[in-house]
Every structure is written in structure tokens, then in C-alpha cells.
Image 1 (cartoon, each protein chain N blue to C red):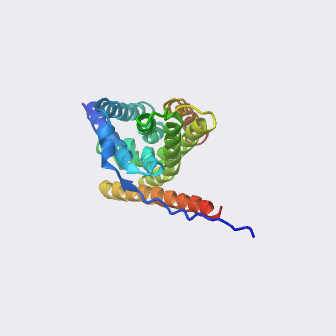
Image 2: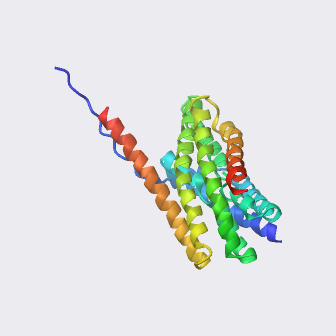
Image 3: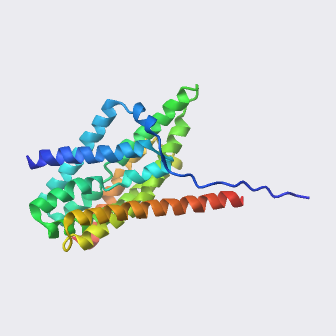
Length: 112
Length: 158
């Protein structure tokens, strides 16, 4: 039941931020919403209810690393599109490897 | 005598274009909903299995960007194709601009996470989230405006 709730809330929050990104112009401003704290908003409120504030605070500390990885991921996506001429879809999916590499690398080096 | 030409470029103001919603198909919305829901569940499962330090990484997983970049590219391409052009380059340019925006927006996301990390334990959680959201939007907007101004001043000097 908890996971179903997470799924519905997560889906809704991500859809709302994505729709905001659709209607905003110029495109680079709309891109700001690509880095909206959608998953965090959906997760943190449920986390506080189930596990307490300290648990949420610890998750947020790791989120700083994930957000840093997000910046590197977006940069890599842009480079793949501009310099390699890849389609946005392909570049944004392949570059997820950069997010994983960056986030897990910093986690293993500092947070673990 | 050589005359120096300069073009004044103004900073574009963000605005809403609600007509863009009409071009979004129902299955595109469904894909975002399922993707967003799945990532949120995975973040919860990982936090339960490996603890909050590992699970927290996934609170900043790029859940919105791939779908948004795909749609922006597709819609820009379709707009050009209506005028008999391929639109492939225009689509890619729009996706690249969106990626640049997301890169800048990640500064806002870092601010959001720092605020929650520092305030969550001591403050009412609803207030913490409200401050964190204000920090996200404020930092992302300020960084975007600064970059625009910098770009426009460079264009004007040329």
C-alpha cells in the first residue's frame, strides 16, 4: 500500500513539474524544471511520516551529491547533442550512465 | 571610415504558453506519470534496503528531463515539418537549450537539498519544504537570469 501511494504521488508530482516545463518559454528557462525536486517532494513527506525527520535529513545530505550528478548529467547531455549531433532522446538516456557514475562514484568515495 | 555596428539584445522574459499543452498527447502524459511513479518507488525501495545515505542519491535522479527533452525535440521538429522542413536541427537545438537550463537548474536542486539537510531536524517539516522550494526556485531563477544577462551583453558588444 505504501509503495502504491509513493507511485501515485511520485507520478503526479513529476507530471505537474513536467507540464510546467512544457508551457514555459524560453526553452532554457523551461529546462530549469528538468531539475525540479519532484522525486524529493514526493518521497520526503512520506519518509518523515514513516521514519522521522532525522532520516529525511540524512537522505537530503545524499541528495546534494545526486543533484551535483544531475548538473554533470545535463552538461553531458548537452555536449552529446551539440558536439556529437545525437538526438535529444538518445543523448538524455545514454547520459544517465554519467549520472550513475558520478553519483555512485562520489557516494563510494565520500559518503559510504 | 569604418562604422562599428552593435545590436542590442534584450534579456528574454520567462512567460507561459498554455497552447503548448494542446500538443501534448495523452500517452506522453502517461509515460511521465509511470516513469515518475516508478522512480519514486525505486528511491523508496533502495532507501529501505541500503539505508538513507544510499537511497537519498535517488531523490535527485533525472526523472523529468529525458521525457521533457524528448517532447521538446519532437514538438519543435513537428512545427518545422508543417512548413515543409525536416526540423531535425531545430529539434536538437531546442533539446540542447533545455539541457543547459537543467544544468543551471541543478544549482537550485543543490540548494533545495542543503536547506532540507540543515533544517529538517529542527523545524516543522512543512515549513522546511516551503523554504527549500523557495531556495530552489530563487537560486535557479537567479542563476538563469545571470547567464542570460551575460550572454546578451556579449551579443550586444559584438
